Length: 507
View 1 (cartoon, rainbow, N blue to C red):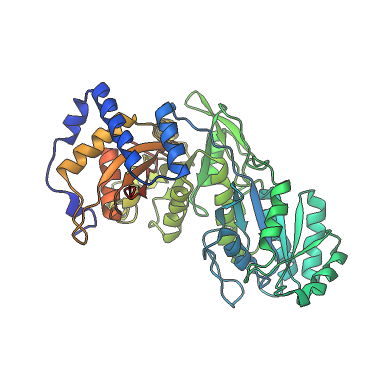
View 2 (view 1 turned 60 degrees about the vertical axis):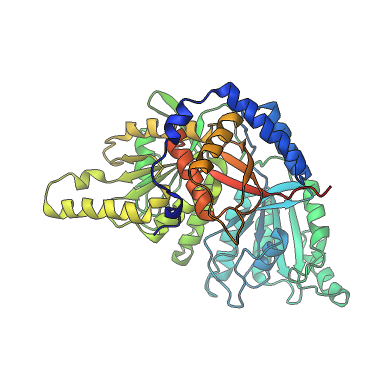
């Protein structure tokens, strides 16, 4: 039995009831529910959300691209420990073995009420032979992607030749650089940090990433130079919609870009991770202009096989920062792979709209047995491995020949419309009360959590907040999401349902 099955409770008339809804009455009821929240303990964030709800914003929020801080340095200097310290939680994998690869490279962080993206380049460490070249190449990519660089050096070891190679790059970049002298666990070690002045990057900041010493002071200084809006991922509001074309190596991304752009402008090389993507190309598809965001404007390809996955995820993260909708390209002639699912999950995590493009479809059109089998297996793979994105529009294309490329446009438009969609508060609360009446939340420990009030906090992606008297099971939250989709569509966009558990005020 699936996690949501216990909430099924048989058929209901939710769709009909919502279609018959008297919107004026629904708004009045929602206002009453909203007023009853005065009996509960609310904080400032709750008050701000409810005030926004009362103003009835029409909702399209253009969130500027967050400024980006990149952490660079050679293996084992404590980059991941610093990431965890800044995030205030254990997100990055920290192990004694250098080079523990992770999929996540971009994290959302906050300091002094300012939000920013943190790029951790510790995900892939090269072998010892190519260490100078590789660390420098990694630093070069990170510099390209960020607004501010934190260059981490192990102060107890001192500056090495690798560190000096990176310094040359950092100096040329013109970006603000903070020299972080890590592993200064107490005041006695501070002279070790002072020795790093001779790197020529200005004042070293002594910190202990593991113990947290000095990190707050460092971040205070970073905030003084960090721009409010990223210069590397800035975009024009109201311009062409921004599309990232993603997918694992050799699934046909480059052919798709070439076909969309109408000419050969992407260098295609068989070596994974070597494509030079177009720099924010404006292309015309279906009579409309679209902006294809590049995957980070990386100038020089790095022909190092071990790093290919790491670079791919770094570039994917950067593209998603800039995009509004992602087209994930899958190769139908091969099984859906773990890497395909990982890329789709990165899109979900970024909150961007999503379209799935099944490429090389022409190969499955012949009626021989092998192709029939592959078509059958593909459907089964989609049902099993992509069930969590069953709401994403699917387009079957052949990027090489351009077949059905025009079908991408309605799919993109559908996904973006859903991404921008807002449900009025009256309607949303009527939906919740009908749903709960038909399918109550199961008792947990003799208690039944109640939903007091719900509102859509934002769009892009549609984000709903439920004020509740207790935690709702994850399965019940997924059930709410599924029914929202069944009634309001939301095809092509993730939906976020957050809870705020609040207790009654004690008189």
